[in-house]
Image: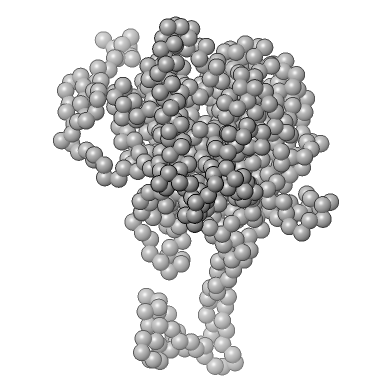
Length: 638
């Protein structure tokens, strides 16, 4: 029997805000929403940014002063917009105006006089150079004299050439929400994002686990850049050069799969399958493919899929800028030279399919919870959508490892074909759209548009709607497709496809045949689209495209499989789930919801395990792990 992987929860954080209850999506189209929904998302952002809280049944501002809820939130509207999405690089992570670096220099003696300087004795090198003459100077200090020259490194500062980024909402600090213990920022975001996803379910996680065996849950989560700030691999590489000590946490917490490890160890207590694929900017979709394969095969009933990327460090910005990949300030000024502005328009730094100059780095953590359709029906879970399939193809031989190739033609064509097989030719032609990779680089605008145009023409699609989320929040690398997915799911709740509003006109070298680039929001209704194709193109030739089905399509499929009676029962159970989802959303806005972080919680050892020939029983687990393994090679054995 087939198992449809349905999306029953999502959570995370990106420059548009919190993912659950579609808040990050709502920020993109906030001016198109009805008053109630817009006000709720303003409240969500204000809470994240430390501008709103609730105490003793009273709403308070950042200074704990009572406020009138609606008028206060409306007054915050400009501040909330300025402090979200792509904007000028702020100094909460590092000071972009004073980035430290060392400059090499050689000190030479004057005439025949020796070089002379005073240094603290404890700062002397462990091995004293042979030409150094050392004498006492003052308590704790020595005088050094030497003939000739001395190579030194001098402390200097520079300004970054790139000053735009997709940063988390201003004032939001994930480490303040739990005992972070010097965790790298990517892992702080992991804890918040995965906790948000689990609590967005409207179902008690322990009750959900009681319905499945312990090994029927899988977690696939990671990053592609690893944890590169000072508490992770960044500090591991920098410490000795900065005169500091490497800590015991920097190396282990820097691993690429550490987001999955944190989810297992501190949020879920998972005993099932775990890991991550690392595939540059396509990492999220590679992990999504792993999760749906588990469910489709029937080996797992629940899969948590996600990525967390925190690449806004001076070193990573410099690395991508040196490659010529980022839109720096001078390039943005050149694009808008006709406006005669004094500073760049940082909010429009990323302009997919328009005249552009490079991509914009972003930070984001996104997680989705999947389960098989039968479990979703049994539990009354919210069905936000379904994953039809995910396709992955490489580029073949390449001249440059960074250049795009032909693999993405294959993934998009396969995803279109898989979508057509579910919703039919008319559905593909009239009721599907594309969330493009849309990085905002000159190379992407020509290559990706040609791919989409080619596939649209081959399928008889006259005007395939195309949008690109990075125009709002930038490029979060491993997490970018997770951002695209969460925004796509919002369409089926509010009916609006966010347009590429940072792009004012399509560039002349963009292929437009059979495509409709949405430069404004498009209201298509909550059931106006049956499917979306999410496209991802990763450095090195890591191409992936997902076919995502609308919830109304998924529910039709489930009714055919399970029958009208079971689906009516499902709808009744879902009412209670919806109420719990709203309860969590309200509590989070009020600052009264806890982030899940279970350190040293119900830790098990060998005494917790009981093994028989056919089962493993784990103390506290509701079901046993089955060891009755059929022989898949029976026809090859005696």
